[in-house]
Length: 119
Length: 112
Image (tube, rainbow over all chains, first blue to last red; front, side):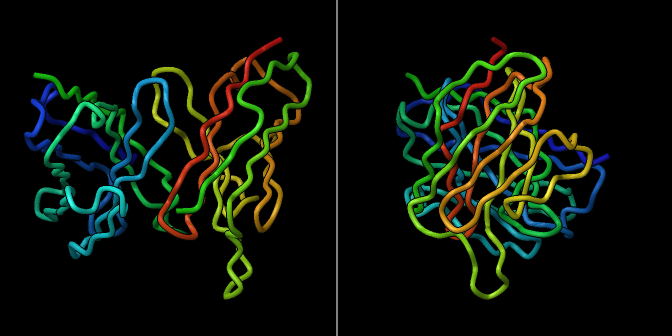
């Protein structure tokens, strides 16, 4: 069965860069689109962006100046970098798989990783 | 951005009764190219990631019970749970994927 697992630091200092990894198992990362979505505690969901098997990316316009996504097909992993962090970036960060019928509907999600931005 | 507005913010329904959640988009998410609504519903239980329930506004994801149904087109959409079960207690989110994906603010469903 398809599983996604996020990993990365739980605590990052303001102005620094967040780096997260999503490890995919049960399916080749070459087969679908892959996304990052975040959710501040007790709040709604925000799409950060997506990456394809070839590395083609699309980002949320509100974050595009600070976001970089990439993929490593040999490791079946994809990545998120978010720079110039502030407290507003504190959230649960999910990686998710684009569905077979539409890349921006998400049929499999990781359990999420909590990221706190604080000095 | 397309803004998604859900109503109500929360509702309490008796077991076995119908629950109805509404979502309105700030512009149409119906494609004239393929006549599909680029719209989905998700369920999020406490401590869990969201789970895809419905896509293309009315197509149930595999394994989703048939008490969940989606309807609507253009800018107005509805998620109906025909007979609420205890395991349906959750927050429900709508999402459009016609443009940059955006989500509604969520509707919390509880047992009355």
